[in-house]
Structures are given as structure tokens and as C-alpha cells.
Image 1 (tube, rainbow, N blue to C red):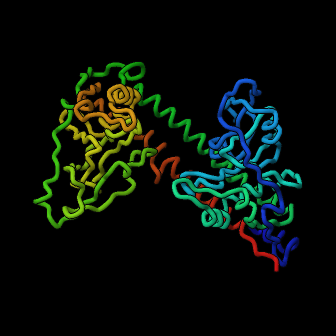
Image 2 (tube, one colour):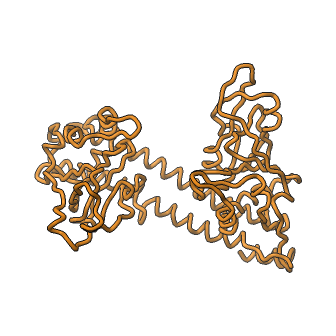
Image 3 (tube, rainbow, N blue to C red):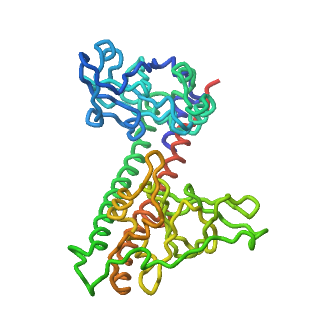
Amino acid sequence: MNKIEQMITELCPSGVEFKKLEELGEFENIGVDKKIIADQKSVMLLNFMDIMRNKHITRDILSMEVTASDSKIEKCDIKKHDIFITPTSETRDEIGFTAVVDEDIPNAVYSYHIMRYRLYEKNNVTPYFISYLFESEDLRNKIFKASKGLTRFGLSAKDFSKLEIPLPPLPIQREIVNILDKFTELEAELEAELEARRKQYEYYRSKLLTFNGLNGNRGGYKWLTMSEICLKTENIKWKEMSGLEFQYIDLSSVNRENNQITETQIISYENAPSRAQQIVKTDDVIFGTTRPTLKRLCSITSKYDNQICSTGFCILRANKEVILPRYLFFALTTTDFYSYVENNQEGAGYPSIANSKVMKYKIPTPSLEEQNRIVAILDRFDTLVNDISTGLPAEINMRRQQYEYYRNKLLTFKETA
């Protein structure tokens, strides 16, 4: 920050010039459709998700093959230092994601779902500087306010062209890009480490819970159905609870990334849903039976003891004389369970699986001592890859907050009089 401040004092002491994007380059959103048409040429397509997932675009990122006319291939080409933008989305938060092309990509075109911004004056710094500006708090707010729509929101090429950005001298741009690149590289390394640990976790979980390979057959085990290892649960009797309030766990309450409850509603007899609601207790495992392959699964902590749960969940209350609640939870995170779910769900547009089908699922159930050993191993992995307070996600979150803080500092300028 000190170095940047010194450079600003030396190179632009009276402030930084702000320019409209239309002064610096041209927006195009002709694009090509995701179709294969006879008599057209085969080309690779740069699409919406390529921009959402990457900050840098190279040829190896393009994976979709389509066809296009000679005219479209000429008009929708992809050149080094082009900036591509997501102009529309179902949510305003996904408008204005950007990625910069690192190399000329011949025999390739861009999708009509994205927008190309090509600068008039070429250099190897400004495209990346502008791309970082699109992440800044100031420009994100401008995009949010300028967006239009009801079910799908967006900005037109004309709207984008009118947005103003600060454009400091090139040496300042270069220094800022170098600093922010280091932050993003560090975050990418942590994300890669997290992904590797997740795969390792899934591998050992599968081995430990199928009782093959590494786990062997220590002490023997039985295949038991859920109905054999779980106790009965009960619905709330609202008439006896008049005037009391409860936390209400519905399908949207469960974070599918870390299997934890993120938020709940408060309900009482007066505003309760018409259908009977279920009581959950500490250590219950709840599994979302509506659109079950979305994997809405979590363990109930003491915070939600004796609270209320949607009928969209199947509640699995472990008989602790037979099975540990945590072992039961891990058994339901396996690919075996979700293969069973996929084969037994019903309905096309809005599939679900009946509680009775869930209760017929069988899991290998060893001794409680062996279950404890397995749970101890898997808990260490789970903490590493899912715990937002101590594991790798916590480290990534801390680095992201640090990055956002410095990014907004570095990209905030006083405008010249």
C-alpha cells in the first residue's frame, strides 16, 4: 500500500482520471448459439460458465464444440487481451463477472450469453486491471444499480459502455495487478489443496465404510436396515404448544457444501405450515427427501434440540445401543447411499424418495468400538475439508477477506478535478 501511495503521489498527485468504458474499448454481444448446423464450420465455443469459473482464458478451457457461419466466426473471434463479461443472470450478483483472454484462440467463437469488450489500445496490463475493477465494491454497486429485469437481470452493451472507471497511469496499474495476482494465486493453491483433501477424504470414507481393502473385517459386522438401527420420531402437537415459538428447519436451511444448518425461520402455532411438522433432537441425522440427489444432509446439534423440522426431511434417530449417530451420518454421505436414492426416487420434474424407502436402506454395522475408530478418522478429514472455523475452508475464507480488503483499498482512487 505504501508503494502504491508513493507512486500516486509522484505520478498523479491531483487525482486519477475517470473514463467511460466506451472511451477505452468496444462492447460486442453478437455471439453464437450452442447448436450444430449442417454446412457450417465446426468451432470451439467460449460460454457463460467458462467466464464464471476462470479469471484467465486459454484454449484448453474451451470444451464445447458448435458450428458457426463464416460471418459469425469473423465477428465473434477471440483475441489476446479481450475481456469477456457475463451481462445477464437470474440473480444480480452474477452480472459482470469477467475473464481476460491470455492468447489468441483461432477457430473459436464466444456464446451469445456473454459479451466481449475489446480495448482500442493494446497492452498487457490494462485488460487485467479492468477485470479486477469489475470485482471492486464501487463498480459492483454501479452494476447492481444499473441492472434491469424481473426474472432475469442484466445490462445491455450500451449500459456497460456508460460505466465510469478510474484509469491511473500504467505503472500503477501494473503494480496493482501484480499484488492482486499474488492474492488470487494463493487462493487458487488453497482451493486446489482443499479439492485434493476432499478426494482423499472420499477415498478413505468409501474404504472404511464398505469394509473392504484397508478396513478388512475387524470384529465382524451386520448389514442392518435403517428401521433396525433407528428409533421412532414424533410430530409436534401444536395445540399443546400454543404461544411457544420454535426454530424451523426447512430444505433451504441446510448448506449442501458443509452439511450444516445455516439459517432457520421462527414459527409458532399461529404461523405454522398446515402439514404436521417433526420434532428434532440433538444427534438426529436429517436427510432431504425432496429432490434427494441434491444431498441435503446434516446432524442436529444441541442448538436445535427439540426444535421443528420440515416434512421434506426424513429424520434418522440412531439407537445408540446399536449405532453411533456420527457413524450413521458418515454412512449417508457415501456414493452407495446416493446410488440407492437415485434408483428409488419417484417423479420426473420434482422427484422425491419416500421415508419408507429410506428406512429400507442397509448399512454395514460393526461393533461400537469399531464405529468409534472409523468416526475418529473421518472426523479429522471432515474438520479439515468442511469446518469453516478451523479447517482449510477457514483459511480460504480468511485469505478471501484479506484479498477483498486490499482489493478495495487498491482500486479506490480520488478523481482528478
